Length: 119
Length: 108
Image (cartoon, rainbow over all chains, first blue to last red; front, side, top):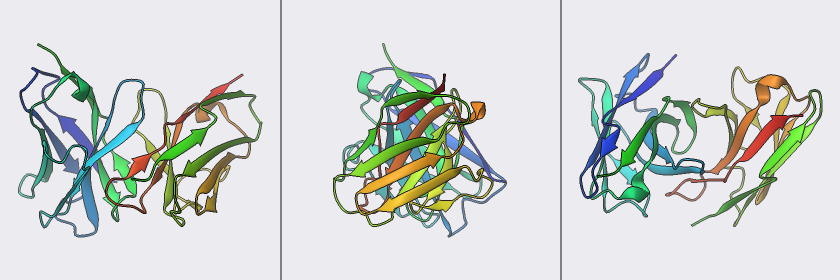
């Protein structure tokens, strides 16, 4: 059974870059069958898809975040990563990594990590 | 972009009750609709995909139906472990994949 675990700073200053990593076990990020994805949830709010990446490096981003977001994959470490630049308080959220079976069918999720943007 | 709405926003029911949650898409999404359950403090869990297909390991009391713009999730006999928030999500129009705002389910 695949497991995903997010890691990264829980506090980021405004205007800086938020960086998170998702470590995958029980499965391979090099599998061509899955899209590796990031989703966030503002406290007490709904879910927002951030973007997804294939092992080939092909990426898909939410247009609302596209100018500030990048997702990359490191098959040697079996990890994929998220960067969000120029963060503001509006980026404070729980960030989860997930595996998508096909483009938008999220069948496995990490526990999520709270990232607060504050000076 | 496609917008998703859900109703009700919250509900409270007795153990054993039949519970129905509805999800509406702002345009036709065929059957590209998933349902997730999120228990307090936990990651979301996929329950139903393609509107009516039950994910492996999900109890048979969970059933999904609908197509086009109107979808329902039914819990045939509510159990205490079903407490949580339920989200629908479309993946017809991509990107972005839109989630519904969620329905919080409690036990009376």
